[in-house]
Amino acid sequence: MRDTTAVGLVGFLCEVTEEAVTFKECLACAQRGAPGCPMVPAIIHDIASSIRSPEYANELGKQAGAEVGFSATELLGCPRQYRLKKQHPYWEKPSGMYRMTFGSGYHAALSRYSAGIAEETLTWKFKLLGKSVLLVGTPDLIELRTDGWYITDYKVTGNPPFGKKVPICNHCDLEMYKGDDGLTCPNCGPLNPRSSAISRVYRPPQARSSHAEQVNLYALLIEKNAAHLVAKYNLEETIAKNNLIPAGSFSGGQIAYLSQKAVVRCDVQLDRAESMALLKQRLSALLSDTLPPILDDADELWRCDFCAVRAHCEQLHGAPVGKPTKEISE
Image (tube, rainbow, N blue to C red; front, top):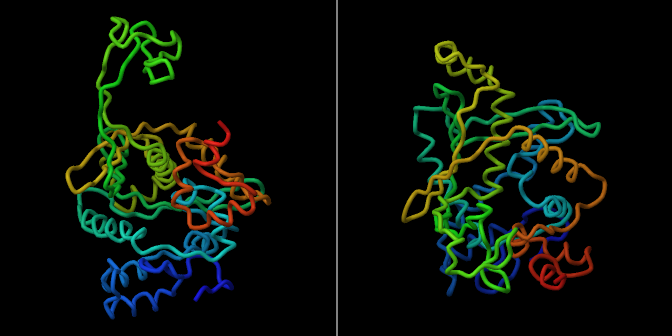
């Protein structure tokens, strides 16, 4: 039965009937061996018991004397979705959350690696738009190398990024794209695919933009907590030996995409100025009195296809959102 009085994630959508049920009802049904359901009781129990409180960051914020708290992950999602999930009840299919619990097992195993700082929760309290804010983040692995801090974040995925050969315009050294008239250079326009003006260059796999942004937010948190990390993990000798500035020395970062077939490592460039601009932009949207606008970035429209509060979003917007919006606008 749908509980419309509570807000946030209040239960599951049945895999068979798509009926809204409570977590307990779903588990009881799985224990009876529901026909057609792909889920076993242990998985349902693990998913339900692994769901983090939606007030996790806010609770840490209050403990730290801040008015509001946000996790780095919350900042990188859709601001409109974040607000709507705080205002309405919603339900998810267990199959859609299976990867979360599957990934938790990977992370738990990798956190036992002792040659670094694993799963250290970091916080930073500051003021923005007249409000006291606490930013919270837990990097998977932090290492202090001879040239500074190095951040690794793990992502369990069935679809890791991959390297590929891309066409490059020899005149402009720009990557070409497939336009209506074939291969097209942003400057020179369409070119014959067999033209000597086109080269093909291997591009290594690239970290997805939101994942790279997450690592950059972690870099800000490490900067603000550097003295604490040095003292807690007895890193003073490494700092002195390599003449490092604890709060300002960074070696870099990477995303390690973990699939069943392979591990794909992608370097992440750290840019403090861009990270600060992103932080202010996302927080300004989340702290605003008005509901944030719908997504209009073509690279982010996929989020709408997996959004549990899409119906509320479209009702308030008065039109479809996501990919249909993009197609209509064209």
